Amino acid sequence: MRDYLLDLVEHTYDLGCVDLIKIVGDDKTTEIHGLAEDLSVVLKGEFKNPVADFIGTFGMPNLGKLKTLLNLQEYQEGAKISVTKRSTGEPDNINFENASGDFKNSYRFMSAETVTAKLKPWKFNPPTWHIEFEPTVASVQKLKWQAQANAEEECFQLKTDGTDLKFYFGDHSTHAGNFVFQSDVSGQIKHTWAYPVSIFISIMNLVGNKRIYISDQGIAKITVDSGLAVYTYFLPAITK
Image 1 (cartoon, one colour):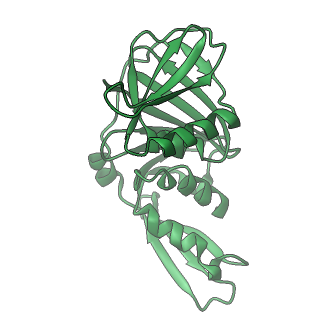
Image 2: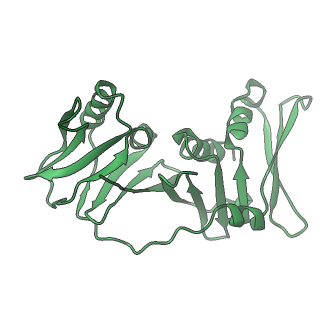
């Protein structure tokens, strides 16, 4: 259970903009749903194997508190981490107890009704993905350098230049920079779309194998395979 919880926190709360997720599980699948308050990123994930303790629909609020509990020294070795359930059978709490049984905490789940009211379903027509590739470590590092050099810019813009996918910071009226993020792409992005720098880099920093999909309809998708789950992040573009 601890491994699943750590994986969840790392790929949701650690983005810096998600503090509430919704779990929908049965004996075949365990789905994860999340949404940034400013709608800058939408998260949909699924564990590769169903989590037996996560059968039902419930919310996980205040993920920062859960991260704190998971990282307390008392719960690192020999701790008991268990899920209790309501009379309806849906998960209610996560109980933490250290190896000696003299240090305890509980983390309370949110009811299905409450989390469903707070996290409205995000629906959209699946776009055509014009470009698809696996980002390289070198390209991600160059992105971080450009973000440092253009720290005043909250967004970067992307478009294709021949067979190169290029990222741009600033414009001709300000300080500016650009670089080739991915070469030899097969598709074309004819419009100029902007995405938040901090969130994009946060996703690139997550542990797992990543794949980027970009549509010229104004949305990007990044998948991260953590080993335990596959997380999909949708980033609606900001029109420039």
